[in-house]
Image (cartoon, rainbow, N blue to C red; front, side, top):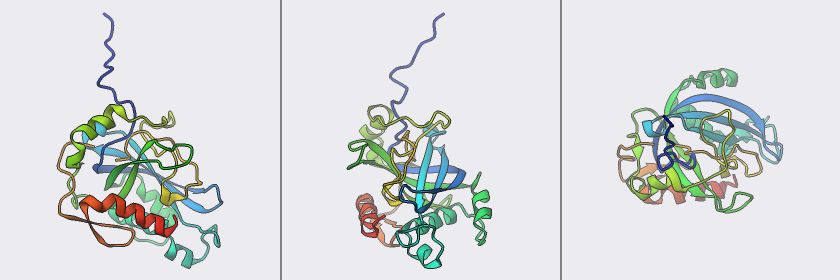
Length: 238
């Protein structure tokens, strides 16, 4: 008997709808951006919602700057938006607060945390007009409810399952990555293509009227959160 191929049920891309996802840390790798700046690539896999389990996210954190490419000076780390964001990831994952960075990286494998995922359209570059997932914030398990945002439960969720298409991710990874490193990760740095996103399921998403921006530590209305994060990154020149 011939097998049936479920055309309508298989998503066309790895892009996931806006929501809060529970992820498991896979690895953190030290790299250099195309402009020679020190940066780190974090790879994580979605665990919940179960409909998106296995989707992989890649997030880039640029630490170096034009005056200190290798981030040798402590002041470079203090000023870096990328350093603040990776710290928020480490705190959400409840990693040991030790100074040995290699030890922190090792402890990232297998850790569990939550991330807020949004869908954005690439505004310029080779992937202009392409949808991609952005990891807007990180939380400890229990700080938020896992699930899709209300607006993503209807047409948006369907779009993430079928209509959106993006460059395929490396065959070695089941899931997704932004077509190009997120804005905060130095637009010049290469990034794996984008499968799903980067963070879904069917529970109520974000609770409360406001969310805390991990870049400027401001409480921002939920409806304005995506625009606020983009503006913070833009001002920081990330």
